[in-house]
Image (cartoon, rainbow, N blue to C red; front, side, top):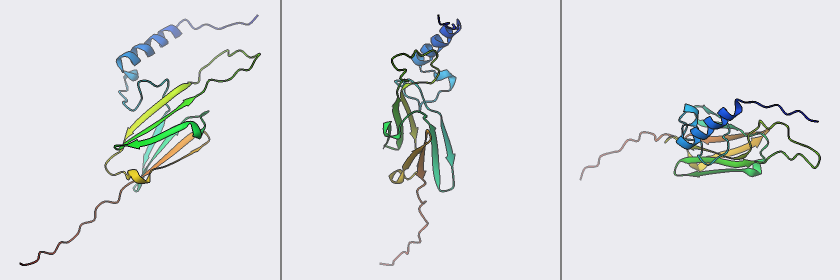
Length: 147
């Protein structure tokens, strides 16, 4: 006989999540980068250097081949799917705490970003997106000619 633990307060957490999703509250963060149709959202660190921006997205358990990264109209979109854990023929999942299903994040790039030179690499469950900054226009002296 197996014993199942039951958390009576879990129903309230689920209700709060449903209310947040319905009213687009997102836990009070107001983060518009999270897609309304996603099942979960990876955490992302954004670091600004003098010459570039670096985004570090934690997506453990997701193959880099299952990550879609696109850039359109200065909006960078990161999306993909984390599959459920396969338990096998005789295994029973006793607890599932890791999020699974589709994920989606969206970031509006600043005017200083060079959208044509964005690169991404993935290793150890972290996708690193490097967005170089565009070179600022240098002042140019214009000679006025006499007619």
